[in-house]
Length: 169
Image (cartoon, rainbow, N blue to C red; front, top):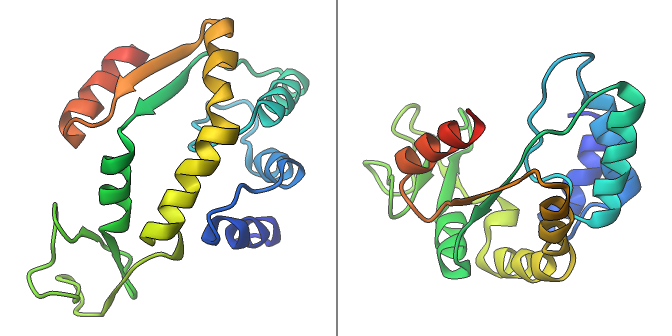
């Protein structure tokens, strides 16, 4: 990654929010010219949302939808803390939903699997706490703008995907 991306990763690995100025600079640096964009996990605060509005206005872009994937905390913890990645090829597994054939080893290349720092249970729980404190107010912000779309993400990947396609038209 970029220097900005590396700075952001240090915060995320600790389960902390990346400072607003750093996130806005990162988004501005990576925003394509004139094309559509999907932002995942950003903005996370109302201040970031306002800064994003300003950035889009300067670039002549329009934010037309914000998707809220609703999932109970217990399921978030289970899904994230069970995720494993291959240390070599990046293949993704889950200890319960998509386990490798041989425990702890990648099916594709045989390399050891690892857990991302921000997928550790205590970090996931801290992220949920931060979400409730700092990110939840975004729901009202985007609801007032009339662009919030709520999706039940506790369903299967296939169901959520179909519902997302329907919601976005």
